[in-house]
Image (cartoon, rainbow, N blue to C red; front, side, top):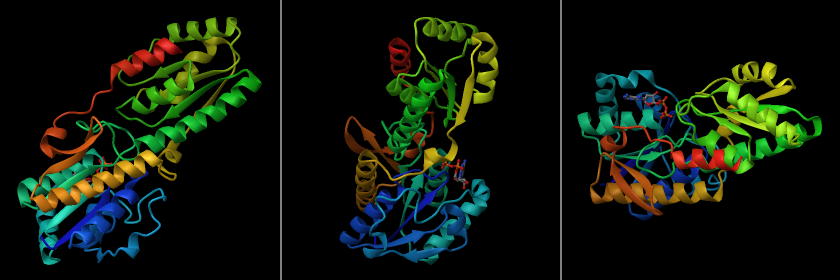
Length: 319
Ligand code: ADP
């Protein structure tokens, strides 16, 4: 193998740059030429491909986002489009591809390998922590820290004004961010897609807390469970005091990656290059019990990662 390429695809997540840097630098040190593909699968189809150097990835580890940029490319679900992509890779002499992205991007990578026989290694990059077979994905830790910082600030003002804050966080199908951020900020309640919510019970809990003298109240809701507006509508008339809504939105995707994400991305980037050099393909790098391993993409994508219900229990127990 002489030449490989790296791309980021789908929703961005903090730490993707550290992963790109690791792939490029370790690839070059291993005697490979490393190319960068801009804007994910869309950029691949547009042949937006350029050689990367040791210097071109200097100073990027601490930056959020992705220097290769990213995109969504709906036509990539078609087999013919993927055949076209494989042809382009071949034309550019690219013999191995590293795809950093979420579930959708990893599906694209898996099909590219299965049908077109392109050697591919995926890296899980998403803030949702919804990718199976890996304890963490690149970006989750930074996102959590951003959410915790925001909730902490809201708690200050909630205390001053004796208000309830409903904070909506990301997580269309996973309540991981809501559960963990709620747990570590001592939120009064967490509303997630995995557990049905009983507003009557929740309102009673909040009223009891207020009677006990608690002056601030934080309810964290995952976007996939309900909107913050819906939660506020259900609660306000029951609790009889003011609520305020904060939707954290896309700030959760940005920011300088934490040490944890930089380390995870660096380890996974190196592991991806090693896997390609070993002749492994159709795999994803994963963190399992502190070690970086490779797992088959088709097994990863067979199921959604399930939320650890122990965390939900813990959040409920300590609030
Ligand atoms: P993420 O990678 O963050 O989950 P998306 O779900 O938007 O983001 O997927 C990113 C891109 O991956 C899509 O725009 C498309 O190009 C490709 N993709 C997603 N799902 C599939 C699929 N089932 N088959 C092939 N390619 C896919």
